[in-house]
Amino acid sequence: MTQPPVTPQWQKSSYSNGAGGECIEVADLGVGGVGVRDSKRPLEAHIAVRGTAWARFVGALRSGDRPSDARLGA
Image (cartoon, rainbow, N blue to C red; front, side):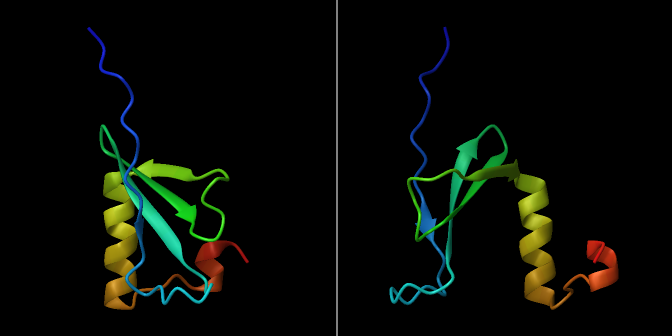
């Protein structure tokens, strides 16, 4: 028996001040996935990434290890 899809519970960034700044929302999508969307456009599309990739991304931001332009292909 399959389970019905779970409605994601979106959480706004703790850096959001409610004044329409550049913010994202994230949600646990289950099965190891994380959804990311623009908080100003919640009804538009979101991206889905593996939870492990999201954890590495957040960890890099917290440690200050931001990619250089060369690593981004710019």
